Length: 195
Length: 195
DNA sequence: GCCTGCCTGGCAGTTAATGCCAAGTAGGCG
DNA sequence: CGCCTACTTGGCATTAACTGCCAGGCAGGC
Image (cartoon, rainbow over all chains, first blue to last red; front, side, top):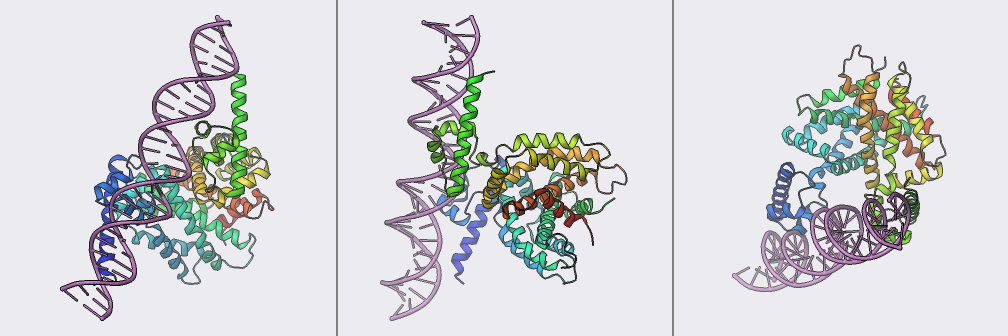
């Protein structure tokens, strides 16, 4: 354990993060420059870029770790559980592992209101999707398999994320007044329940 | 008709576009600079940015117009048609109105192989989605309305686009050997058919 | 044939991001 | 305790995507 180094690195990163989120909320994402964040956080621009590879990572940087967690969670659901239910379980875990709701709401609003951020966020999510496809594929009955199993798996994963996205947007739009998991269930029901 | 101006503008834009797509295909998107495109197309960098606001617009710039067409098409489907079928009809029209298949394939490959392009592309489509929500909402039976109608409409639209996206990815990945509309139907079936 | 108006190109400047190098500091070792 | 090594930091220069500004040119109306 390279204790002091790791620790001060952690502290510095958190300071930068707090500064950045505060400034973004105050003046908007585009209007806030890296130079300003670095100045107010008491760090050089160069080091800031070493902590966070890009400006966008300041907002949606911790998504990588969540992706790993999501994949593992879905994998570990009981084998008899359907792909849909396994994915839902994964989603649920992500929810609890995320930021405290207060901050999650702030970040969500920022992301949904800032095109470049939203784009980057989507990009990260696409990587999750790609990783989940084989996991979901393994869970599909090889039975009738009318659509090629890969097509099926890709479509299911894409739809689940579309519903997560829609639910999150609604949640952020209503200032977190509704339950995110409930909204997700409503979205999925709207898609899958015929009639 | 501001004939000569409009016309030469059109020609110049097309030249730039062809040059850009060729270079992107040859060396990749990230490796191609605006300076190079401008040089080879015989235009100043400054003017290139006047034609296409951003580098990404060189690839997915003509999406705006298609969005309008999509919305109008969905609106004009017979009133008794379900939201799903109306959206499918819109998708079908888009397919025929798009680039010739050869170029569409090339562009699709470029987009799906370049993360930043793909996310930007999805972001543009999100604007279509927002415009389609009220249209789809009007088509939903006000009946039981268990999920709030807006939630329902958003979820349906998001899912349809997720399936379009998945189908396009598969189509581009298989070099256009399958029919895009067929792939779309398979994706939607994978999502909506229980079993 | 001139005048007006739009368009173009060049130039400078901003911002995000990357590479390089010198300087500082933690932690191990004699 | 003092040195050495490893790692980190910060400054400098550079690139690439944009943007604003201004001068000059060319189409189209009079």
